[in-house]
Image: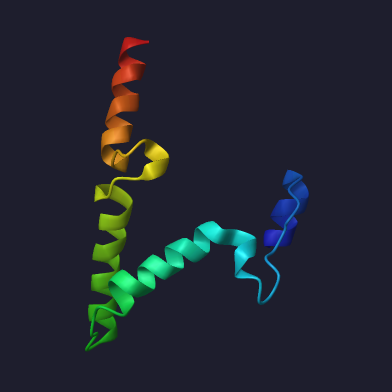
Length: 89
């Protein structure tokens, strides 16, 4: 299905090589943070508890943390800044 979508959309798929994590350093950085800050730091007594804690971490990571790629703003603050700029444009 992915192959079909890519072909019809004119997209060339390019997969990371096995054993070469440096092919995609962004996901490796994310995976490292997830392991250090959530998975290794928590004890999950059940699958439901794991899902809940990981979801809480994901929300914090994506919404509340300052991001260097956004000039040190949180994603919410950056989105608000963009929305304000659009109102005045």
